[in-house]
Length: 289
Image (cartoon, rainbow, N blue to C red):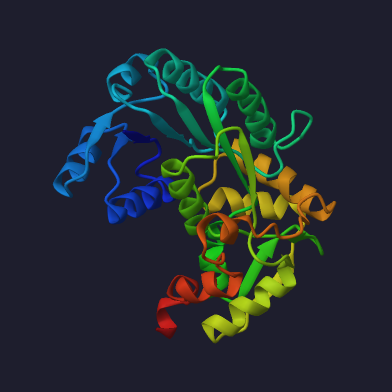
């Protein structure tokens, strides 16, 4: 049995869809009973489990051979994931497939990059077989700025820095693949998109796909932080994103494409153009539809 954490999130939810389509037995772990009920209505096994309450993980992990581990970046992420890893070991889970980050580093000023590095070290030393996936920045993060993009501008603070943006749908495809295949124990895979591009090129692609001009605005940091707060990000998240995008300016995210997604799944990764076309309606003002 495969246990999927983050089953109601973007990547975890996509993993569930892929496994269901393949007819693979899995169990979705949810924090709320209504979420469990929703999965049950779809004919999917689901169970309550909360990383903030390790005692709830015993039942969730019963009979589980492999666990998919993912949590959103928060100040509690280290405590949540290490508790999950320890609970999995006690429950006899044989392998953990974990979503980490391409920039994970114990010396990183980016809070979740540092946290992922610490969790990765904990996992490797836990005595459980593991596979670690290290994606670059997600294309879906552009959806945070869908409203300003619909109005014709892309606000950022990345200067001329480039990123090998990756689609979360591709990350999920890799996760689903390594969850069911043998031979990935002890492997760490860096997952990138098929190209590296800066914000000026991203704005051009957005313009081409939406049919309206989108201009890249390289904003002062305080203004960008305010926009992040207005788009629903916490103070902690906004501060971390500003630091991360400063890393982009420094060139720390300008990673050459690895093409691991195509090698592992047999299907090429989505390009940024693919992503924008697939989400074009979200980047267009309702007045122009």
